[in-house]
Image 1: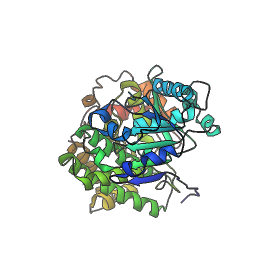
Image 2 (image 1 turned 45 degrees about the vertical axis):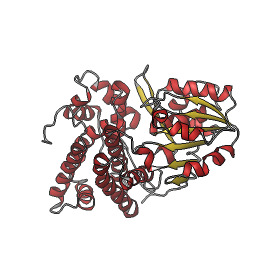
Image 3 (image 1 turned 135 degrees about the horizontal axis):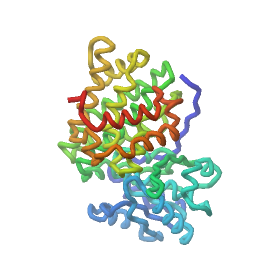
Length: 394
């Protein structure tokens, strides 16, 4: 186990009726001018917008809607202008990870006079800036953005999708599982796969003897595996939605990565897919993860994959048999969620961008040096190619 420092100051308000009980006073404690950030308008269709606005009659609320999945830097630029023009005191972010990611970067850009993309290209700049307080209301269990400092932002003009980290996580997060009842089967599956991927990225790493962290992750993985199918079949099942929502938050709030040494291989490779093809992030991870596992399984990693198989999938047998069966079980679970299992099913029919995507992933994420199992550009291209068909996973 490596040395670590851990702190997380996000105040979690979990459950029903928390918005009515606390939202107004939380926002008012930071000031009168609120920037409300949200996505495509579903909050107005499902009544959440009216429910929230009813709590804020005496506050000055300015709106920035239209935040897209794989949030674009143009939205950050618009938010930066609004925070400066209206002297915003606090940001209220309502949505999933994309909306919250955008809100956190807007909160930093408020204190920056240059282009917000600078803060993505050089995340160190953000550490020197103040950050507006962000209060979020989560509507999709997936990214864990509601309790961490990270944002992932896309720039379509440069075909880049990059991560950036700010000085603060959201100050308060409202987590009401009932707000995810209306989430589509597609997004429920994508979010569940994203949660599992966050855990596997941290589980398979270079640090040894991290039994505390690995045990927590195994429990979270079992939880996601159990409850995702229930949420798909019973969208209004509170226990399913609650367990997925809290698993999402716990998977990426920093706790389970303490003392670990992560490479985040699959995310780096998938970000290239989203940058070039704007695919749903969780679905891209679902296609790539089983293939990466096949690549990463070798004599040195076999024991860890066997532990994964025994403690997460309840498999028995020799290390090699359990390791291989665990990878197949991962693929089968993703397929059972009715998620795409090939890149072609995601609409990617040509390999014309694979070489440049692979080189970018290796360069940006240093996959040839810090990955759980190092990967060259040729390895990544081969992974993309293997992901075009179901060969080996039928």
